[in-house]
Amino acid sequence: MKLPALPTFNITLPPRIKRILVASAYPFFYLFCLLIFAYLTFPYDRLKERLLVEFETPKAGKASAQHLEIDAIGPYWLSGLSLKGIRVITPRSPGAEGDLPPSKLSIDEAHVRVSVFQLLIGRITLWFGGKAFGGTIDGWTRTNSDGRVLEVAVENVDISQIDAIGELASGLPLAGTLKGKLAWALPEQKLAKATGTVSFSIADLTAGDGKTKIAGKLALPKLNVGVFELEAEAKEGTLKVDKLGAQGQDIDLVGEGKISLRDPFADGLADLYLRFRFADGYKGKNEMTKSLFGAPGSSAPALFELADPRIRTSKRPDGFYGWHMTGAMKDPRFEPSPTGGSGASPSPGKPGALPRAVTN
Image (cartoon, rainbow, N blue to C red):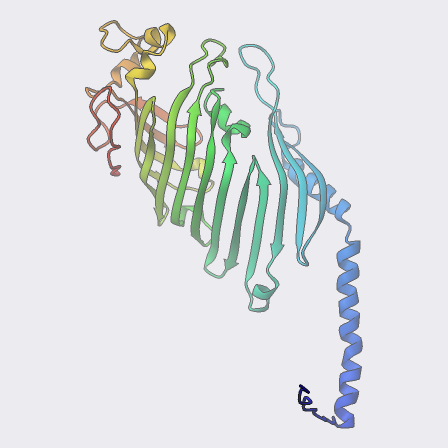
C-alpha cells in the first residue's frame, strides 16, 4: 500500500527578515561559545583556595579554630558548583585521659546551583544537596523582598557516623537512622521571626554498646530506645514542641515545651520539660544495671540516684525522672522537676502509650 505524500509548505521570507536572522545568529553563537568556554575553563582551584581562606581567616589564632578541607571543586550543571570530600575538623579540649583527637564532620559530596529561570523573574533561588553519613540531604532556599524561605529533607542518615552527636551525649555511642523535613519562612531573614514546621525521626535508636566506657568509668549495655520522634511548629519566633519522645524496649522518654528563637539559634531560650524511665527488663539485665539503676522490686537505693542528689529529687511517683531545661540553648540549665510537664504516664515498669505532649 502506497502512503500518501506529505504536504509541503513553501515559505518565502522577505530579504530584510533573512538578513536580520543571519546577522542575529552571530551574537547568539558568540554567547553560546562564551558560556561553554567559561564553564569549562573556570578557575575552580582558585575558588577552592578562596573558600578555605574565607572560612579560616575569622578563626585564625583561636585554640578551638576549625579547619576546612575540600578535595575537589567542579561544575554542576550550568549554574552550579559540585564539591567532593568536604571535612570540617574541630579541635577538642583535653579530657580526663589526656589529649583527645579532633572531631571530624565529613560530607562525601555536595552541590549548589542557582535557578536560572527564577533569576529571569527577579528571584534568587538556590538548590542544594549532598551525600553524607550514609544518607542524603536535599533542599532549596529563596530570597525575596519578604525575607527567606528554606526547605530541607533528610533521608537515611546514620547518626553513628556524626561525631558531634556522640560528643553531645558525653561519648555515649548512639546508632539509628535519621529522616525528616524542615520548612521555614524567615521574615527579614531573621530566625527570631521564623514560621514553619519541623518533623524528624530516628528509627532503631540505640544508646551504648556494652564496650565503650562513659567518662572512662562505665560501659552500659545497649539501650534500645526505639523510634525517637520530634515534631514542632514555629510561629512568630516561638518553636512549640508538639511531640518529643520515644517508647522503646528499654526506656520511655517524653518531652514537651517551647523554645524562644533568637539569632543565632544558640542564643535561643529553652523552656522544655523532659522525663524518662528505664524499663524493669533493662534494670535487671545484669548485676551492673541492678546496682546502677536499682533491681526491680528492690528497696535498696540505686547508685544512679546517689551519684547526684538532684537525680533522687527528680524522681516522680510514676517512676519517671523529670527535668526542666531552661536558659540559652548554648548553655542550658537542667533542674529537677518531679511535678513539671503534663500528661498521664504509663504504669511504673510497664511501658505503655506515650502521653500526648502539651506545651506549658
